[in-house]
Structures are given as structure tokens and as C-alpha cells.
Length: 298
Image (cartoon, rainbow, N blue to C red; front, side, top):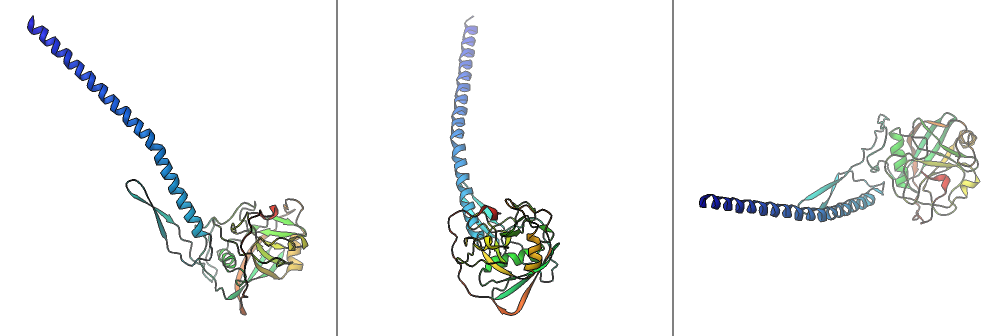
């Protein structure tokens, strides 16, 4: 009997020890869970800061479309235990002069320098309403001219609609989607003219605010356009076909939203260098902080 009683006591002690150990493990798990619950917001906060830092760096580095460095750059941001690399994607190479380069869709980054900024360029634009010619002067807007030539030589504008045409105001083109909201996937900084620089046939960039130039451009078709404030990068002038082709394009316009009555299509753009002519030398101004005219937004 004594032996059996001792065995029962021993078994009870063992059971209590096992229960205590189980409770200890449960408390440890709970404490670990609390630590994880605190750590998650901290980790999220760290990740948000990293994303913010990379985004700011990326915006600063890509806003200047005239940068010539196409080398892939790696930014790093520290974490608790390691360093996480963030890669800035290099732009596509400059398109070939023979017209064989084609790219569809968005581009990975704003272009490097693909033009000779001391030369004047001529863009011959063929539309379903006829042909017109524009001179592009890097002397007044080198990055903007570089961007237009880059996109044109990749055949980016070929087959696109001029989506907004307002009589007496502007003919706006350059959006491959034809909706007014499309673009090449990047933006670059303003190169603004002085007040009074716009005139009939002026070629300027549409935008959605300061430093948001992309692919959409407009031709000033009437006095209302010439009276615009200088908040759009001016980079060229129609030199032939304004009174015929551009006016035929303008005739398809409507008031208000400017949705064309029928399709006005850029069939192709061919760019060449104007022989014997040097780019002008001028000074651009910084973008003002006020909003842009609603009819000229990307």
C-alpha cells in the first residue's frame, strides 16, 4: 500500500511539472507574439521610409531628360540586417539614323542625349490632312528637342491621333492612346520661354503641371493660343504647311473639350538636320507654381 501511495504522489508531481512547463511555453509564445505585433509596424515604417527615399531619388534623377549618362545606377538603403539594392533603369539607346529603330509602348526612362545641341532639326510630319514641316531649335529647349527627336526616330508618333483640337487655339497631338492621358512612361523638366514668345505655328509641350513634359505637344493655331502664359516648353515652329495642312487639321476641331469631328492622324514623322544652320542661344525660365490651362494637360 505504501509503495502505491508513493507512486501516486510521484505521478501527481510529474503531472504538475508538465502543466507548469506547458504554461511557461504558452506565456513565452504570447510574449513572442507581442514582440512580433510591435515589430510589424516598425518594419512597415522602415519600408515606407525606404520607398519614399528611393522615389525621391528617382524623381530627381529622371526629371532632366538631357542627361547623357545611361549607366545603370544602384541606390542602397540600410535595413536591420542587410542592404537592399534599388536599381534605376537605364534608358533605351539612341535610335539609329537609318530609321530602323522601332519601339512600341512605354519607355523605361527618359532618353539620354541623342542630338547635337548645336544643330537645328527639321521634322516633316505627314498626316491624313496633308504634310507640314517644323523646325526644332535646341538653342531654346535642348532637352525638349532631344525628347521629340528621340520619340520620332523610334516611330512613336506614327499612326497616332491628334486628340484635342480647338479652333483658334491649338492642335494637340502626341498621345499614342488618343485619349489625352497617354505618354511614354517618363517625364522631364520644363524649358520655359519668356512672356510673348508664342505665336501662330509655335510648337510647345502640353503638361499637367511643372516638370511633367512627356510626349504630348501642341501647335498654336490661333490668337487664343498665342496669348497663353509662358508655362509650356517652346521648342519649335511650323515653317511650311501651316495655312494648308495645319488649318485643315484645325477645321476638324470643336469647342470645349476639343474632341475632333473626325480622326486627324499623324501617319509618320521624319527628322533630319538642317544643313548650315546653328541653334540659337537663349535663356529659359523656371516653371511658375500656378496650375496649367485645362485644355493643355497630358
